[in-house]
Length: 170
Length: 99
Image 1 (tube, rainbow over the protein chains, first blue to last red):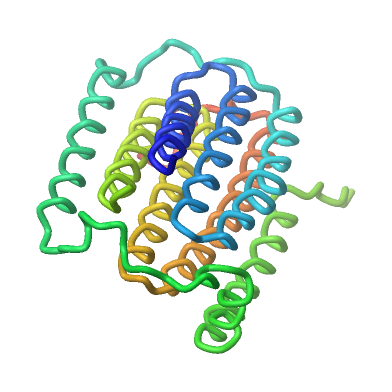
Image 2 (image 1 turned 45 degrees about the vertical axis):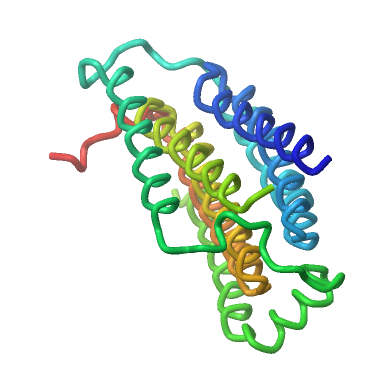
């Protein structure tokens, strides 16, 4: 059962990722990314990370993607021109990506991490639920938590400065 | 499923995102591919946290989500600003700084 769920989610995540790269229309790329994010949320649930999965669906697939859809609708998603500044870029880039994948896989799988071939240890039922993550965030990781809240505020102000309409100063 | 499957899937997703950044020229799609790479990193973090049996990796994943949200907000702000100034939305045309 777990293997079936894993393979369905993995196919969803990988298919969504490839569709993001391959589709010409940016609007469809955004929709493919939403499929990818939902599949990743299912994978997080399989890894007993309930809170991360919920945050993924609510924050990412909900809020961030709505922002994307608005900007794509505003900017207008026309396709790219076929002009290539570097000859053979479309052939070289997938080759580089395959090399990167092989390198990452070799680096991780040939490492001395013996637990890689296991399911991981048995965990208590509360592993990864909101209460446990909340306790970690507000006790052990209080400083990073506050720093990330300041970062979010700075990003929001920065976006308004960047994209806001300039006052007409005649 | 063994943890190594998740790690290999995460490497595959990361490589897909990297190839997208290399191929595509629309800044919007490049931002989307950056999201793919960040999410692949998140998957690896959560998988390793399960492997160790420790929830701290999940907190890291949440912080990565916050960083991704900030990056999206600033990046989309930049794209809107580029569009307002009637500049082409193509990273190969916007290369005055390259010299």
